[in-house]
View 1: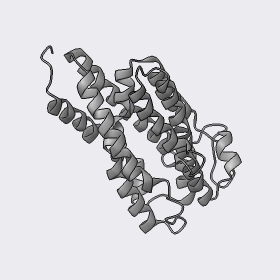
View 2: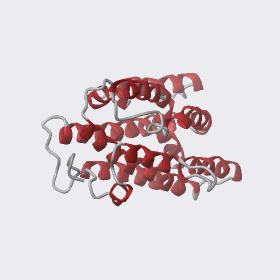
View 3: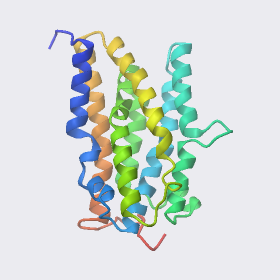
View 4: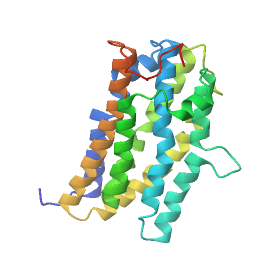
Length: 244
């Protein structure tokens, strides 16, 4: 494992990880996109996903502080604005609250995190910790799940609009900007990791960082499926549909 992979081979291996592990393959997402969930189950997904969305700018801020050049910090600062907004237009976190509100959940309840599944909290906190504590190379590489997000967004929006009468295009407004933001993020991150992973061991760190990120996204859906689909056992304190 000493021969350095050429950039196109490293990219191919990264994409193969997504083809095997990305959470669009999870049974819960198949149910969500296929219109097989009831409103309470969709609420549970949106409520728990909020914690992930709200933690992304916190995660990015920890990395921003560690980046060594103005150019890198400027690029990563754009990501913060994408999620937090810039004061003149809403960011991703605010748009996600439009989704939860459209599904009938009160903003105060969503942002309080009172109904969060423990596994959601553990998985998201692990991601923030990973980006804060691991190398900059690994932290950037962990963002590369965005390589696979445009496909899942298109599938999600079309499937949900077709299947659920309790959502509309306004409810799902979070997703439209991500169709252009995510490819821009990927172009930068992919260029960075293929350039900065200068040894075969560093390339393996890049691959493992993406595996880790895919695994934690998968784990969040495992928890949702267990709590709200089968066997349908939300843990104490977690959101119960109809009893916010």
